[in-house]
Image (cartoon, rainbow, N blue to C red):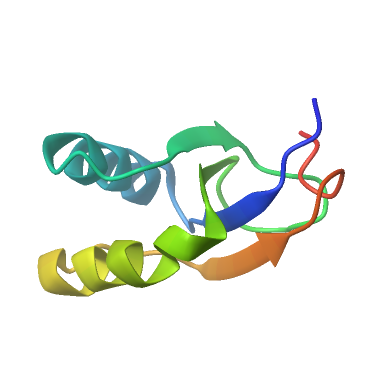
Length: 81
């Protein structure tokens, strides 16, 4: 499957699951995906959302003290897991 979008990578699975919980509670866009092969991080999970949601997602992360490792915008094909 070819994915395109904003990818937020995590150092740990705990960070990824905390991110998922916070987004679900606040109806924020996106979903957990396997780490794209184009990105390397310590955890095998990443959050995928639309690039236009970047600001609101990062504001939420700052407000809640959510950790993440990397934020990258990928074009179609780069995020294949």
